[in-house]
Length: 452
Image (cartoon, rainbow, N blue to C red; front, side, top):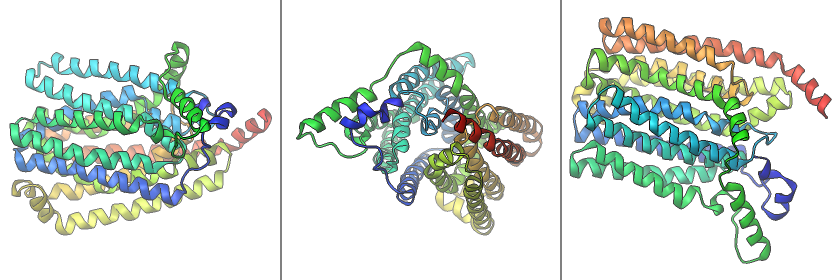
C-alpha cells in the first residue's frame, strides 16, 4: 500500500490521519457486524420456516464445500493489508491478486461437486453459493483499505446496506419459486450491486468526502482512482503469494474446523441431520459478531504495538480481550442451559427444539472459539503467519479423527465433542506461539533501531 501514504499522493489526496477513534471504530464495526450477522441468521430462519431441514442441509453442504476454497484462495489478504504498517505493497497489487485468486476459486468450486457426482442441482447450487462468497471476497479487499485508514464506519454502512437486501432477496426467491438456487441467486445480485455501487466508489475509499468543485479535489479524485485500480505485476503477485499463503492455509483450516464435522454428518447421518446441526450451530454467531467487531477494531493497534516493540502494552490489551471473551462465553452457556429448548422452538420449528441439548455444547465450543479468535487476530497482527499452520492443522486432524470415531456412535453430540477437542488444542497451541512471538520483541526492536 505504498501509494496510499506516499508523499506525492498526500499532497494531492486527503490525509489518512483523519480516521475515527478506537471507540467510534468499534461502535461502527459492532453495528455493521450485528446487522450483517442478524440478517444471515434471518436468512437461515427464513429458510427453516419456508422449507424443510433437508433444504437447510443442502444450503449448509454448499457452504461447507465453497467456504474452505474461498478462504484458501483469499489468503486473508485483508489481514495482510491491515497489518502492512510499512506499506510494502501497493493497494492495486492486492486488488489484482485477489481478482486472480477468486477466479481460481470459482473453478475449484465448480470442479468439486462434478468430481463427487453430486448431481446437476447440487452442482449449480454450490457454484452459485461460491459466486456469492466470491463477490464478498472482492469487497473484503476494499474493506481492508478502509480498515487501514481507520474508517470502519464505511465498512459498516456497506454491511448495513447489503445484509437486509440480501435477506429480502433470498427469502423472496425461495418463497416465490420454492427453489433454494433462486434464493442464492438473489444474494449474488445484491452483493454485486453493493460492490459496484458503494464499495468501489472513490468517494467511499477516500479518507474524507471529496467535493469535486475545485482543482485540488479533482486531482485528488484522479490520484485515488489510480490507487484503487488493479495492478497485474507477476513478480509482486508471486511475492505476495509467498507472504500470504500461510494465512490462506490457516483460513482454510479454520473453516475446516467448522465444516469437517458436517462432512461426516452428511456421510453418516444424512442431509436432514446436517440441516438441524447447522441451524443450531449458527446461534454461536451471536457472540462471534461482538468478538469479531472488537478484534477488527483493535487489530491495527495491536500490529503497531508489536511493530514498535511495546510488549507490555500488547500483552495488556490481549489480556483485556481474553477477559471479555470469557464473560461473553459464560453468558452464552448460561442462556443455553436455562432457555435453549424454548429459543430453538421459537426461532426455528419445534422439531429443532428436540435437539436443545446440543446448544449448551455449542456455547461451550463458542467460548473456546472466542478466546481462539482473539489469539488468532493477535498472532496475525504480529505477522506470525507460518507459525499458525501447524497448530490449526493439528486441530483439524483432531476434529477429523474425533468426527470419524464419534459421529457414527454418538450422532450430532459426537460431532460437537470432536470440535470441542480440536479448538481447545488450537487455543493452547496459540498461547505458546504468541508467547514465543512476544519473547522475540526485544530482537525486533534491536533490528528496527539498526535500520533506523
